[in-house]
Length: 192
Image 1 (cartoon, rainbow, N blue to C red):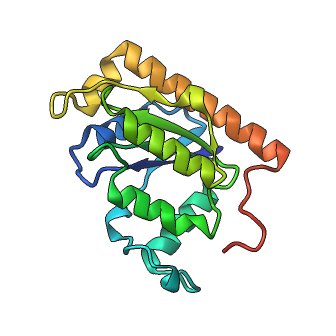
Image 2: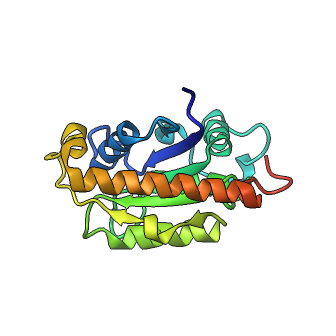
């Protein structure tokens, strides 16, 4: 069966073994048959944002991100916190999306794998809201993990965590269905 809903998952960490990437890979494994969760892997390829380069054609990595955002029904971001802020690579990627508007009206949930990392979560929420994304605050959850001590398999086996992740996915998909019905889940007119 071809999945009906597409969720783009973005880790704010470039590390393959980061707890953020692990929780997103576990989320993909927990998705129902009608939902696919695709982990965006091009964050490290996105060049530093420069408004003078934000023309058509966009840099290849930027065009790929924009395309994947347009094609998804919802977005799930799991990000670490660096120096009380959003990691530069994630903020840089978001800066490339401001003018093109792929996040406008798009339902978004946030995962936080460190209960102490509240500054980045708040800053990310502010940035996404300013960009016109539909951040669903009740789907922004903490999944406490100790770096290096948890893998995807143990996350899948932990019933409380697995249940919380499944619930977020179900509600995120429901929110994307409502957005589509209301005409909210579209890129702004005139954007590329």
